[in-house]
Length: 77
Image (cartoon, rainbow, N blue to C red):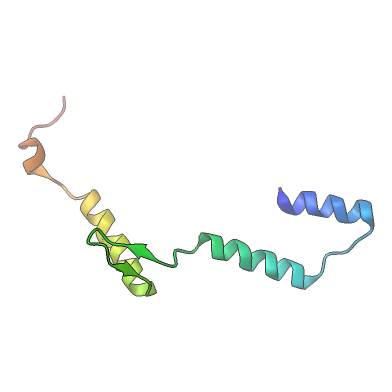
């Protein structure tokens, strides 16, 4: 949508976007989507990409792990 609105403005004003503009736009969007640091439960902040990835994997493995002791093996019927 942003690109479309920008394009309309350029057409109306007779401007042409440059390649540099699009590279900067992509760089800004990429930076908004990347996790640059994460805080563990113990308060330690991780900034290395591989550490962040491992922490996220560990979080979701624990989140979706089977916890039979929590429901004593009972199933919902």
